[in-house]
Each structure stands twice: as structure tokens, then as C-alpha cells.
Image (cartoon, rainbow, N blue to C red; front, side):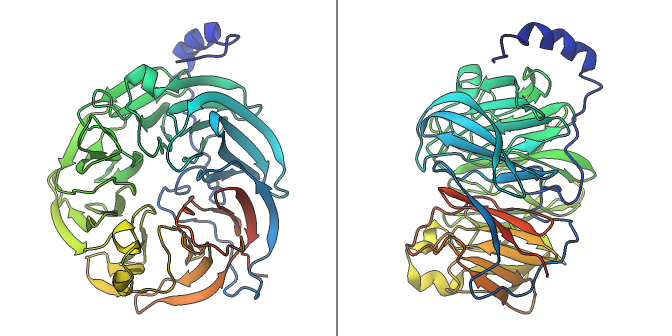
Amino acid sequence: MKYPASQSSVLRPLALCLVAALANPVVADPSNWPNYLGPDKNSISPDPTPLAESWPAEGPPELWSLELHPGHGGAAIVDGMIYLMDRVPGEKDVLKVIDFKTGKVLKEAGIESAGRVNFPGSRSVPTVTADRVYASGPMGVVAAWKRDDLSLLWSVDLAKEFGAKPLHFGYPIHPQVHGDLVIISANSNEASVIALKSDTGELAWKTGGLYGSLSSPIVQKFQGRDQVFYISQEKPETPGKGGAYSIAGLDPKSGDVLWRYEKFEANIPIPPPVVVDEQTLFVTGGYEVGSQLLKFGGGNTPEAQVTSKWGSHIVPPIVHDGHIYFLTHENATLKKKNLWPQVGLYCITEKGEPRWNSGAEPMFGRGSMILADRKLIIRDSYHGKLYLVQPDPKGYRQLAAANPFNHKRRDLKRWAPLAISKGLLVIRDERELKCLDLRKQ
């Protein structure tokens, strides 16, 4: 663990006095997008700003664009500022603060983190609280900065501190703030999931035996209490490769395992579990693992119901008006065009009953998806196109489509998470960040 030289002697005693008082709640304005998957961590914006139901032939208005280093990290948006992790290839992670209106970089702070991974660049979405920013890079360095001036509070190298094994695709960690704790995966069998004290970065608890994962832990309310959901992987000697070992629910205050389900055999799981209701989770993944509803019925041992032979490779599903929407173009189907009519955007009921799938076109690939103003915003990773879709249990209803980056080449690596605030969409490809105006005029 590292502290700035000028602060290390002050932070420890200060933390002892203030740790109970400074809960650092995530910023609660419904128009903000303060962390991975939005304010409620369900890919849905509660912001009531109405969106246009059609776009001009040239697409929605582009307000600005900004060049980035190669990467896949998504944006957080809070109080007119964008927070984004960038990465100088092979050298360091860089937290950027960008003016939401102009796209101008106002501040940035770098942290040394040498090394390279497959699909180079940033991975994660920062978490922004009232006075801090927490973020991580693909080499497993997690850090906290003061929000006002980006002065570094602390940093933790997961490999050095917890023996984390190198992940084939890097560390896609989206820090989860719960009270005065920052919860992340440390990707070692001895410390699979850990909680760090938000003031100091010191270890609060660790839970072992769950191995590593490319699926970042996420905190959600389920069965009447907050839980940390974690999909872990087998073969602890090579985390990031191999079949899924289990899905677990942990107590965010202590790290105690509340329940564990060991029959979801995903190869490289990425999307976190999604809450359907107080007793039901929806889990999905790529590599032909398919999708399941886990029904707990008031206990800790779920009854599993297979809902689809196909699953979402990267983007988490969205639960809306009694139905579940998820993208099913994944590695197992992308190279087999004869399977494309069976996949696409899927719609099933919350009970697992199939309604429809969109089929071969549009070809969404491993894409990105959020919901705002009761409309799905989907970016396909295949052509780079952006789609506006009206969720409808009766069938696929496309309202508009555009190609904001004018991509000519097919490429499946456009999967960075989307973010939206007040009708303005922040979207990136590997090297460029844009802000698009989706508002109803």
C-alpha cells in the first residue's frame, strides 16, 4: 500500500478519528451516473429527461469528441464532470476529469503501473463519491483521489499486497463503495474478494476460497439486505481462464459468505448477477453457458431454471416492466453465421418464458446497453453502430440507428460501458470519447 509522502503520517491517526463519521456516500442526484452501471447499478438511468424517438439521417448531434489512448474503460458522470480512466500503454494509469459540456480535460492524475495485457488499455469505470474518486487499472493497481484536486490519498497494488495472479485480459475492477468500505476482487484464492477502508486503503476484511474472476463484484440489495455478488472461476493457478467455480453472496460489512451456488459453469464469466426481485437473480454468460434464473424462495439454496441456451458475453442484462432484455451475440455464435438467427437481443419474462429474439440483424456483437427514458440504448461492437430501441414484449422495435464513429471496419472490441446524464450520452470506441445529444428537442 502506498500513501503520498506528505500525507502518510497524517492519514492513519486521522482515519482512526473519522472512519465512523465519513461514510462517503455515492452522489445521489438521479441525473448523475456515478459508477459502473449507473446510480442504482442496474444499467438504468432514473433521470426523467425525455429522449428523442428519432434521429436525423446523420445521427444524433455530436457535442464534442476527445482522443484517448487505446482502451475500454467507461465514464462516470457527476455534477457536470466526467471521470474516466485512461492508460498510457505499458506505463501508467491516468484518471481524467473532463468538462461534460465542452469535452475539455480539466485535470488528470497518473499512477505508475507498468505492464501489458491482451486488449490493451483501461478496463474499469471509476466510482465517484461526494469527495473522492476510486478507480483501478488493468494491472491491478487500485487508488483513491480527492475529488476536488485529484491529490492521491492511497493506492494498493493487488499483486504485491495479496498475491493476485496475472489475468489474461487484465483486472476489470469497478470499485464498489459501501459505507466506509471499498469492495473489490483481489483475484487470489487467499483473498478473492476484499474490502479496503475508504480513508486509508487498509484492509478491512478479506474472503478467500472463491478464486479470481473477470467478473467484478457488485453490491446490490437482495433478500432484504445488502449483498456482494461475486461470480468466481475455477483453476486458481490460472485465474481468468477456466470454468466458473461458483456464484456467491457475501455480507458487505464482514465478507462472510451468505450463500453459494456451484452449478453455473461459465468459461470466463463477466456480467454480474442481476436482481429480478427480492428472491430471484438472473445470471448469464458467454461461451455457451447460457442463462439461468436462480430462485431462492426465502432460503440460501437457489432452485435454478435454465431460460436460454445463449447468454450475454459482456454487457449485463436489463430488467424492465416485468421482462429481461439481454444481448446474446457471444464468442460461441459470432463465428457461426448459421446461429445468428437464434440470437441477438433477447426478451424473456421475469419467470423465464421466452418472448422473442431480434436475430441476425442488427448484429450487436458483444456490445453495450443501458436504459433511459424507458428506451434501450444499444451500441453494437461489430459495426460500431448505435441503436435506440423501444423495449416491447411483443417484438423488436427499433426507433433509430446511427454510426457515430463512422466505422467502416468490422471489429468486435467496441464494448466499453455507456453512461448518460440529462439526455447526453457519453460513448467511446477504443481511441475516442464522444458526447451525443439524445434529448427530445
